[in-house]
Image 1 (spheres, rainbow, N blue to C red):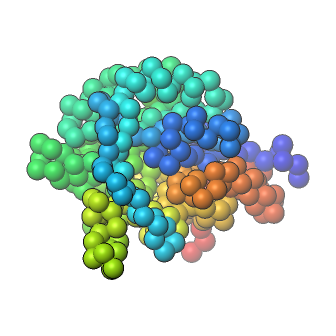
Image 2 (cartoon, rainbow, N blue to C red):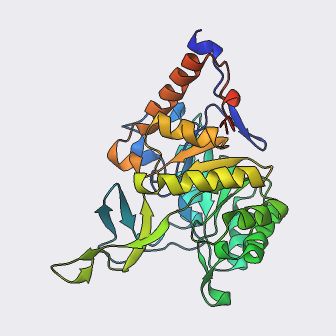
Length: 307
């Protein structure tokens, strides 16, 4: 069976992807940073670094530390802000053949409403991914993503103010992630992506200080894959909308496992720091797997886990 006979295309609502492999927000810059290393047009899509209304300087260093099978980061959502993103970063993304998805973050419903309004229908913005792991400053700093009602409110607000598909990125730092997933589905989410990072910390025992200035950070990388895989499997059984798997994906085998668990697509994050060509290698590996399995379409393996 020739490669041209295998269909890797998937759909996230109205958004068509040439293959199911996306870059995770915060791990691939604004895309242009990787242009000399990766054939960007080969990717299923690029999810840009999270964007807020105003520019953010992020947290003081040290902000990243390597851990066993992963890393901790407390970058603090540093970004250029939505206006500079549209003016200076989006033109490059607009010139690519793969779609660009914009991750947005805020500290209030008003922030999310304004971001959705400014990105509404903007050429080159194929979809919006909402980071709901951010603190709601008007609710005492409780993360939007830990409360079903708040998660639904953010989703509904963004959905009302933009025409593009809306993907909600779920936090794993909750008791029951399926409850949050069902809430955002009911509020109009086109899809959900999961998981965001797990909270963790590291200590320098000789200095007797935290390794990260922020003390705690987000744990990512292969160490979190079993947790992410379990949550994707649970959510895929709980909602009817597409699920995008994230968490420790570094090989085609990893990506395929997430798809068998029910993910329509996957996002590759921390692995990009180790090998910038990881996404391309995963795409090729999925194609080989389909050939080995005698499949003509990637759709044949989505949710194909045997009990």
